[in-house]
Length: 432
Image (cartoon, rainbow, N blue to C red):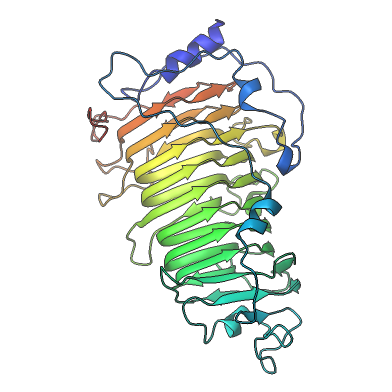
């Protein structure tokens, strides 16, 4: 076993009892490769990256019961195959919209569709299917407030086999505004669209419940591509690239924003979002965080593929009751190295940035089965020096069964928590 892999193995066996002080030798240079197409991510695989890596079993000295290993599955699905399986056939009972339709003269039929989503949803009862015909909406800026039920969600999708684009070019979209804003909605599925060219955000959820955003392509977005706040939100099977363009070209803090391609946030009253699932997404070539969970209770981030983010692959900030599992994070393009440190993004980073005494703060988090290759550090806890409340710490964090390879710095790095703050705690034997 080489010294490099030995140091990684030692780091992997530290289950956040203290700061990881491993200092692996400088890893070999990354190969000069370019990303392959999304359906053929063969640049780095679990098999090639971990060929010489020792098994990362839990240390025998701890009383923590190891979680059941979950098979590593971070291969992007075929977008077209999955979309075709999940799109609902458009029947005569559906309400139709089209970029060539008319809100004034249309009647919502396939032969005479409405123009806008807002008009199509005006009188849509629970269980309505909105089918959008092929074409491009220019200067797009829509708001969705539909009210479905658990038994009868409202589904918004293209006609199967047709391509629909929401293009924000020419629209007046501010930095925190969106091409698609799902506001106050309940039990809505938004699937199968291309969303592009926003001077603000792409798709956002506000004060909403039971929303699913899936099978969408988002690109050329100035700030966040998908995200927001609410309860019972699922973000899955989306592809995102060229987002957070406010930082493009290493414009480190030039605009002042630190958006993510996918990111959660609070409700309007500042209370945390709850029960959020972010899975099976492909995020690449983004000038910010790849996926960021912020101020959320009960979040699952799993089976995502993230390559060439600017700052961090996955950022868990003020997360309580979370799982980060079976994600693949890797670097192939030095263009996205941060200009302040001249090295790639970190793999997974934990923090309580701008901490308050109120929950949530970093607590009860499982990080498992992730493959991280070529990042600055693999898994890192960053202690925010500007936050002086005693909750600026971490509690009950488990890091198990991860493969970390070819990092520029430590495989696992936990900064010290000064005595001023609550000291870190280990999970109890029952895992809580």
